[in-house]
Image (cartoon, rainbow, N blue to C red; front, side):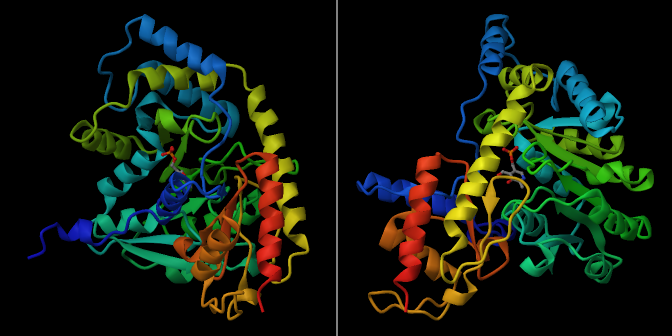
Length: 400
Ligand code: PLP
């Protein structure tokens, strides 16, 4: 017998986490690394939010709270869904946890039995298939290539559904591609779900407020009432309000699912930090102009990266409309030789070459289920991005 449980032996550590860890190690050795691996805003948490946390501590809000969120935070979240998404939920349909990550974990834990299938469009966020496998579920990966703008073909979705399918997992805007589904693109997907009432929808909207070029965000739950009734809408304050360290994620969905998730959480972590919950109330109720200001900055940075990569031989990158990632193809560089004679066999080799030769850290596409690509996070300073593009271009031009 293995020393550890089968469920933990089934999963891998986060590969984007591993890339970030490698950067920290190289930095500790004294190397200057341009780090484009981080999946979090580089901006500080807004001051009104920090002040609200301080005030909560002074008021003595430092004790256990209701397991899956205080009443005031749940009411605030219900208002957010009504105001921003046109979705109407009772407080009994809202759940708050330690990040959207715990929400997803709870939802899958509460619903998957051995052999249950979850449809995951690729490229995907690294944690989805691992969580599904952890609970004994089967990730059914559906390829969404660059030629389809990394978006799910409803025909492929229909083909992937079996009697064991429990969930379709959608993530728009997407980590790692930045792809955003428009309402028109969602409609045929929702249509397939309407015809398959045993399939529930997990909609990860965590990058909702990071959309560009005047695009209007549409959450999949807003399209059809019957599908909305079996949708868990997942969101959080991490990316929108620069609060990754505060660990507040939330969801809205069927009350019966929410109560199972709360039961599980009560036996695991109990409530998320009382102080972070007070901060999240202020983030969602306070001034919202910062959202637009930050989105404008990200859009400018995205353009900067796209311009910087446009003429690099061997790279191809479409213009994504959301999140803070681009996901270029490096197909034309695979098989080429580096100056020291190493042949680049795949995107992992390419990313290693960028790091060794130029000190630019990015994450290989295979980590997200689509090769040969790599992910650049542009949630970092303009100067870093400009210099990184120069170095990437130099590294590519030295391949033969
Ligand atoms: N979903 C996606 C697609 C993400 O990229 C992340 C974070 O990187 C999360 C969920 C989790 O966010 P958090 O747990 O900070 O709310």
